[in-house]
Length: 480
Image 1 (cartoon, rainbow, N blue to C red):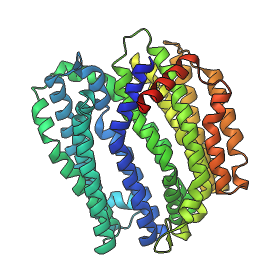
Image 2 (tube, rainbow, N blue to C red):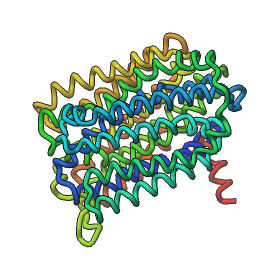
Image 3 (cartoon, rainbow, N blue to C red):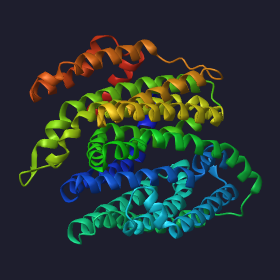
Image 4 (cartoon, rainbow, N blue to C red):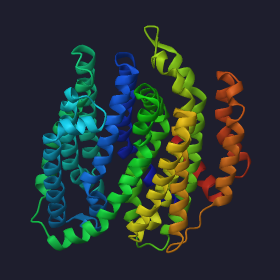
């Protein structure tokens, strides 16, 4: 099993590279926007992208995951299944985006934007359509393990988005319009690069296969929308109750949990195809359990690194004496530890989701996700009027913890998994013991606390004999 999990780690790194850079793009633009856009404008951008995130889930129809699970035969592409799924997604996306384009002005008013910003809604509509047209080709590249092509196309699109956003906002002074225009141009360019994949796999649509995939995928839309509620509903609620400025500050500092966001995003890109390929194996449950332990181990260490050093990094004069984030946004730094911990629970949720996906229980996935969404909405409306942005952060943590608990409970019904609760408890206790004193010490002591994390796990006997032997083997190979 350990050898297989090393393969998962390699694919996490390969598929995670474009994910890392994509997230870094968002993060690198955050300092730029914090210096060039007022908190109110940042709040408007956060709200607009929140709605785009909701619709992205609907546009995909759940067919990317359905194609990976049902549309490929014996590890090979099925052109008829790909053609059916692709044409369905693209046709639906074009029709929906045309409606949004025509109704841009009333939609702008509905989401709190002035009518003169209706052009932003139109840009958003066609970003949605272009991104939807890339969902199935990217799924095919992942399913066929063409990591180089996947990463290359992602990287070119990411670089284009970064450069264009800088030019449009910094030099052409297009403001929010420049943000959306850069995104649209980069998305269309990436779609053009994926054209060979689309042409090679686009077979005559098979209606029977489409019906089967939609039966699997459509319930995932419900789950995906619930997941988006957890991820982005706090911005519109915060904007309505506390104002666009506070929503902008919160959204900017929310992104400072980027380290954990990257780790979870990288892992999820590799984890889904990895475990779905092993759906019929008798040891699938044991693989899930061990992966949860390993992901928790790495995630807890990443959590400590982020909360120890993000504040000093953000406030340091890095660029010609200017800090990374404009001082007008520093009031939001208090949310970073809570948001980072929430992302860690999101990663645990992805691991424990596997039994439901393996057993095709997509209805249970939706139920678990909406349990988290209900917790999120309830806590946001309850806590934001009292605690402001900290209320939004606690609502996010509560939602992801509820989702992880829900998929664990639902998964036990059909596929009991031997999770290593004792080892996970050791992880939680040791992480809390190191986090607690960190706020009262300087940077050198924080480095020592971070270095103590793996040392403490070794001394407590956290690793088993087989894991220690594998670790020694890896170290010996690297020395050789």
